[in-house]
Each structure stands twice: as C-alpha cells, then as structure tokens.
Image (cartoon, rainbow, N blue to C red; front, side, top):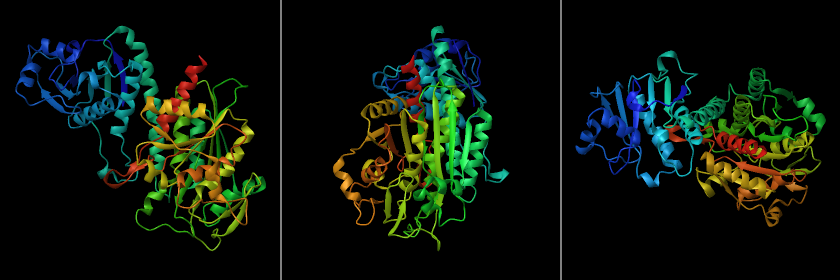
Length: 498
C-alpha cells in the first residue's frame, strides 16, 4: 500500500473514494461538514433518514453524490466525540478498510486523522493508520496456488492534513508506520511459514538476506561452535531433531561506536512437539509459532533499519526444533549451561528457557545497555492474562516503566508480574543447581525466575508473548506482536537522547 499526505480540503480533492467521519449523535466531523456543504446537504439528508447513527466502526458507502468530486463517499461511524480513544481509533481505521475492500476503488482520500483522539498528535495518528491498514490488508497466501490468491483493488491512501503545519509530522508518522508495518509483515510471514520450510537453517538464510538488504552484520554459529562455547542447555533441546540448531546474531549499528547496544533475544523453536514430554495432538500444528519471539526480532530489526534509528541494536536468536527421538533429552537428564550452572530437565517441554539461558549468557559479550528477551514461553501466561497483554518481568524497574509506556503508546500492551525471590525456591533440585520447571503454580513467574539466574550482569526484561504472538481458530495466524511495542520502545529511546 502506498501512503501520502495532503493539505487539500476534502470537498476539493478528486478521489475514487473519500472517507469522512460521523459521530454517533449524527454530528459531522469538520471534513464531513465541508463535503455536506459542497453537496448541498446530501449527507444531512442521508442522516435524517436514520440509516446511519455513527456508532464506532459503522460504515455506509455512497455512490455518485451530486456536487462531490469523489466517485464514492464512505461514511465511518466515530462514536462519541469526547470519548474517542486509541482503541476506538484503530477500530475506526480497520472498519474503514473493510468498507473499502468491498469497492473497486484503487485510491482513497482519508480525513479520519482529523479526529481528536485524546492528546494524540498527527504523527501518532498517521503511524497508527498505516499499521492498522497494513494489518487489515495482510494475507499469507505464498503457499496457495494462483487460483486461490485474493487480490485487493485498493493500492493508495492519501491522508488529509487539515492544517499545513501537520504535513511534515504527518509524513514522519506515515514513514514510521510503514517501517513498523513492514517489520510486522516479516514477523507474520516467518511465523505463518510451516515448520517443514521454516527450519533453523531457513531462519539463518533469512537473516543473511535481511542483512544484505539493510547492511546488518550477520553471524551464525553451528552446533560444533556452540559446543565449544559450552552451550549444553541449548544443544540438549536439538538432540532429538535431524535439523541442526543455529545461534543467529544480527548487529545493527546506527549509533555511535561507543554506545552500548540494546540486545533483543528471541526464542526460535521452529517446531515444538514437547520432546519426550510430548504435547497433546490437538492444535499441535500451532507449535510452528513457537519461534515468534525470533520472528519479532527479525521484524524489529527490519523496522529499525528502514527508519535508520541512531541506535546500536543486537538481535540474538537461538533456534532449534524440539522433537522426540532416541537421542532426545529425557526427564531427569542434567545438562551444563554456558554459564556453568547445571540444570535438571524435569520436563522436556520446558525447552524455551533452555535455549534462552545460553543465549542470555552469550549476550554478555556485547556489554549491553539493556537486554530484552521475547518468547512464547508459557501457557500459564494465557491463563493469567488472556490474549491481550504480554507478560512482563524484569530485574530493572526503569526498563519496566519504559516498556509499559511504549505499550500504552503503541497499543501493544504489557502487564508486569512479580519476580520475587520467594518464587526461586520452586526451582530447587536435589541433583543439579536448578530444575527447569517450578511446578504448576505461578508457571510464568518461575519460568522468568529461571531466566533471571542468567541475567545478573545486566539490566534485563522478559516478555512472555505466548498469548499474543498468534491467533487461533477461524482467524488463525501470526499477529506480528510485539514488534509495535519494541519499535515504540526504541523510538522513545531516540527521543530521550534528543
């Protein structure tokens, strides 16, 4: 989709489809009022008939309106004028696209960024518009035959800047939104790819492609190199797979040479059967999404590179399959991590923390400013928080505050859970330094407690995205989260530096 911004009053702009807002008191937005005046009360007459009441997301398409320079006019309901919030604004944009999809319009002139959304400015609204539009238009049909691929007529959206002064920040918002949307698309594509294609080797290949396009330094460690580094925890997971594990590192250098990097560590289990502690067969196909943490690191790095943010960022992706085999790890096995700490594997389905712990130790060599790991780590987070926020645990409260704020701005929200020392007792083992599970109680918290034992040398936060990384059921598919959260956090870092 192509996006641009113009300071041309809607009634004067020729368009295949003009989009204007109507509040639920049948009060028109400023743009709608101008169009109504130019068309001698046509919109007023429609509203008087009672067919449109302006509830949030309601749409009505008008054709061949006398006096209008637009071929079509799409009315979009905006709810109560003084109650319009971030979530409702995104819903309005989403329903606008759903309305446009049913037309043959290739281009639309959208005035909805003139709506008042709390204290949000044009840059925020333009960014959210692009992200929402691209999300609504996303389709994963790479593996469908030609006859089953659906095309969309709409190719271009022009955003109305109702003041000339809004044009420049509006352009910045569109550019940021496009970069974030592109990062989310990459994340979704990797997540939706089936596990017979998306293997650890495939992810390494995709990393090299990304590095070549955006001048990101890529390095890939194989199993022999990981063994030499002592990554016994990570390699214990890959033992049951015929696909070799990889440790992928992506280094983006947009900041000064002396600036310490922000390190993002993404869990990359390309298929998780549970190993010897095998999962139930129902919905096991969705375990291809167990690499969505890794996919979000790819997407975030892509977005950052497209925006050319002046930061140093390192992405670390431990990637493997977790499958049962004669060589696979067994419950009761004890392995030694790269940190030298020993782990008793009581459940082979708690494998994500085993690959992450070695990657978190590996992160020390980059002398990070902060480390954020992203992982579809526990089903417990879904029981606790559902599918709306991702779980957030950290050893550094300022980092928590920054991530919470980024979640509120982006709409990709987090909810903090405690990381108290009392929970560490659940990881005690009679035979090793720790067990890899802490029992049924507080499963998300004890998983983070496990990881915290490998992050004592830097400021760290853990994002458990098991409830947010993909949708199930009829709308099954990767969501692209938490790319919006991470990119907003990084944008805020840049703003703080200024």
